[in-house]
Amino acid sequence: MPHISRRSLAPAKIMDKQKTQLGTVKFYLVKDGYGFIIPDGEQDVKENHRFFHHSQLQVERVIGAGGGRKTQYKAISQGARVSFVPVQNDKGLAAMNVTPI
Figure 1 (cartoon, rainbow, N blue to C red):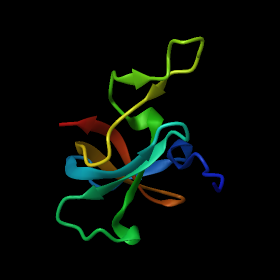
Figure 2 (figure 1 turned 90 degrees about the horizontal axis):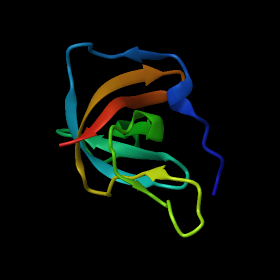
Figure 3 (figure 1 turned 135 degrees about the vertical axis):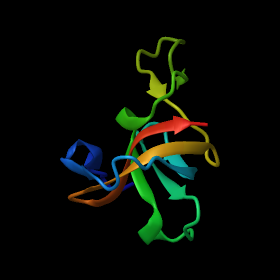
Figure 4 (figure 1 turned 90 degrees about the vertical axis):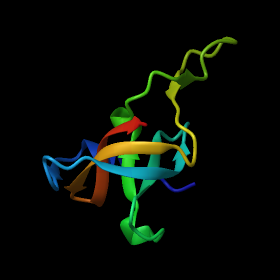
C-alpha cells in the first residue's frame, strides 16, 4: 500500500465558512487513519472525493483496544452518512469536522 501523507495537517482554506455539506463515506481505512467522502449531488469520480484524516472524524466509537492491544482507532463504516465542512488544502479537496448523521 502506498504511503499517504497527512494532508489534513497542512494549512486548509475553508471553502464556504457557513456551508456544512452532507455526503457518504466512500471508504475508510481504519489502520491507515484516512478515508474519502462523496458529497451529495456530486458524481462518484475521484476528482469529487473529499479526503479526511482520522483527526477530523467526530466519533466516539473506537476499535482495536483490548486483548493486549494498546492502540485504539476511530472507526466509521463505508456507506455511512456524514456532515462535513469542505476545505481546500495544498493537496486538494478535503473535509473537516466529519460527523455521522
